[in-house]
Figure 1 (cartoon, each protein chain N blue to C red):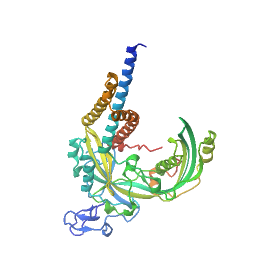
Figure 2 (figure 1 turned 120 degrees about the vertical axis):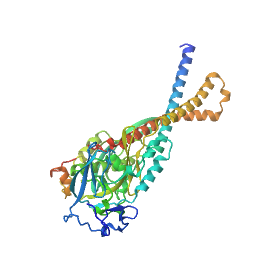
Figure 3 (figure 1 turned 120 degrees about the horizontal axis):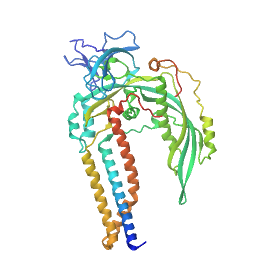
Figure 4 (figure 1 turned 30 degrees about the vertical axis):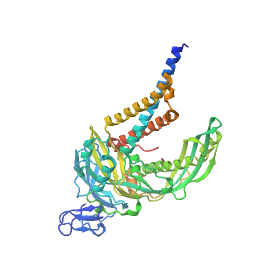
Amino acid sequence: MAVLCKNCAGKLIFNPASQKLECNTCGSSYRPQDVEDIYASSDTKFYDTRVYTCGHCGAEVITSDTESSTFCVYCGNPAIVFNRISREYRPDGIIPFKITKQQAIDNIRTKFLKNPIIPKEIKNKLTPENLRGIYIPYWLINADFTEADWIKGTVKRGKSSETRYYSRAGEMTCKNVPIDGSRILNDDTSRKLEPFYLEDSTEFDEDYLNGFYSNISDLSYYDLRRSAAGRCHALYAEDVVNSVDRSARDVKIVDSVYHIDIHDDPIYMMMPVWFFTFKHDGKPYTILVNGQTGKVVGTMPWQNKRIWAVAITVFLIILAFIGFFFGGIAFGFRKHINTFYMHVIAGLLATSMLCFTTGTVGLKRIFKNLRLTQSEAIFRFVKKRQE
Amino acid sequence: MSNSDSALLVILVYSGMMIFTALSYAVFVTYLILRKYSDFGDSSCKLDEYSQRGIGYYRTVDDAPAMEKRFLFTEYGENPYENNTHSIPEVLLKNSGDNTIEEP
């Protein structure tokens, strides 16, 4: 619960810029470790929180006494009501916010809003009221991991290609792998927020929560093991594919089996994240900013008209360029086509398949990221985990 | 095939190539623009950030015969950590609803 100023009994808010608790009434400031919370539970395993529930998406939002919740930080809906005071397990550590709200706004503005394809009305929505700081629960695990893989690749032999198979089995030990501890936040999204640097971590003190929201870990040990195994597999797989003969192309794992053993006592941590929530064309979007490093994560909606205009212009220019070449051949004014021009055309034709593949795969990934940014996808309750 | 048929075929082939090439570049440029201006935050954490020793390989067979797959998964399919027990934080036990730990 909130701590009060010794001088004026005003509420203290944690300021990321000074890393101190500050009183908005009289201007006094205190280091969090120097402030004694008279309401704190004597049982140090727990701390008290205020829980709000969103009537739209069902999310539970936890605040300290200093932050009254006016809308859901997950879906932006104002239908949020105070539910209860709850006692929660105290995390082992916390990385306090280092990026201020203004810095987070500036980072988003720099990344997204100074470009011509973002709709103007979104630029107007980037206000301090639409930005909320929330501590996300993570588990830091150390683990032993073994995996066996059956890998396929293609090797050139003369003018033909040959499919080859490779087998690999090995083990590794991982240290301090961060696993998102909340079912409500999608794994893909939380992974993009990394890295968090543990040098800034400190022992958990609820005073750091003043002025911010927080979430609690709702994972079971089974969930944690599944997430950790998926995460270690992703790290392992990238390395194992690179262990295959470099002359092989299209190398991919076709079958694998893996096992994980999480060491004793994973560490329960709170990591700082800024949420920018807004609605566009009736759909909710959430852009995230790492509260320690300032890294911006998310995909902004764009102005379809402008993107179509660019695509059609490129299409017509290339069409006209090549059309002139083929027309020259067909209608016999080949003498006007010089060698350089022919080489350019040959290059365009030869690389078109590569452009098509890269473009379609890339667009597919961007549309997937856009769906993740739309809050209903990000914060769905049954989190899709990597199998 | 008459001359007019072959001419038509050539025109069709050329037109198809032109349209495909133009379409490919339009798709590619659109992707580049959206990646630059709209999409942020792709991460690529490497193994060496979380593991100092990296992977210790037990088995590396190149150009493996088909039988190798069966041997591989027979030998490494069983969980080597099956009998290990650990202390688990209370909050994780509380969330599971009971104290049984299932195998992922």
